Image 1 (cartoon, rainbow, N blue to C red):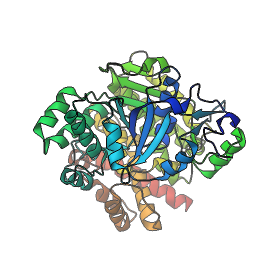
Image 2: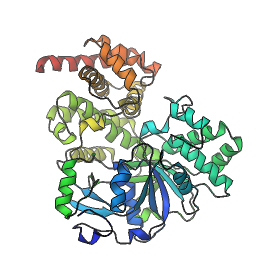
Image 3: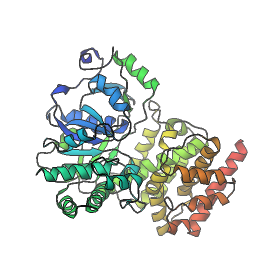
Image 4: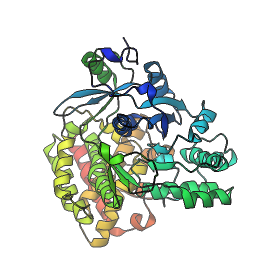
Length: 476
């Protein structure tokens, strides 16, 4: 028996306290993957108890997998909370999923509905098609395609710009655009990208977007491992019905949104969303104290042969490196949001990392390192360098990433990264000596020249790289 509206009553789980079929589509979300369904969709599910306007139309820009899994289930799926206490909750806020390449006009119809007041996104950092300086990359293949073919876009930016053009043409107000990816100043970057895109062909549209579009910055947080067959089996046994694509996460969840104007918008704070005028402080704390250590654990943990975050955290030496990196190296660089103790916040994150109920694969966290490391690690390293702080520990994840690329290149296993060709080319030419470091430092899409040519940085990364080579020799 498979989960659906017809079988919902039989599911042994917390059920929606509303009729999912009665929800209006008020949100179009790009990137209907695991994190969105574990995080934002859960907040909209809570909103729906008192406000039926915020049902979600999910949009996948590439794969039909989520649509094909959820359509027979009437959009329902199970959120498994795996922590000290384990619970199962059926989410009903996802009312449909469209696949961009197959449903382009349907997506635009949703974007131009008067009832749609929000467009949200979890398309990963690379989905914004930005250059290393965070400006829109007009040479990006998808952006170049969309500028030439605005009615049949491939990129998230192209969809948003054309959707706004059609709303303006129809005399509608813009939707509120809320990015939910780990990108510094994500609202500012996204609005700039959409405005620049529109301005390539329509100055009036670009001006209208600049003057009218609300695009608040955000910070989102909840550890969400990918779904696997073990989770599907676990959920089916627990709730008594089959679910083709359940989602798992830890109990902790956080959504911080910049204060903004949205007449008739959701009552965010009623469901636990933090509205603030200082998102950057929350954002920097999360990017550098959670995401940075996550990447550190991923590359150093894989180098030591571990598969998951919780197992890597059982390595006392590695856990100590990560803790010191957080508290001694990163915390002194940060401004604490009002009421947040950054040392206590760090300790709480380390406790979350140790959660044995969550199997967060290091290989998953290691994806897209060329996009993540500049934001998660190099930002801290740059500031530490400017302050004259020791940068040794901040160099360790960079060296471990280089060894990870080298290993992937030698093994022939797939590498998930937008710079895959360049990285594999570098990895295959490495000689397993300190000369490898200069090969990676020449990659300007990752390392800006100011860092790549800094003697302290070069010495720091070479020292970390030497440590990893020595460890490999000892344990070979």
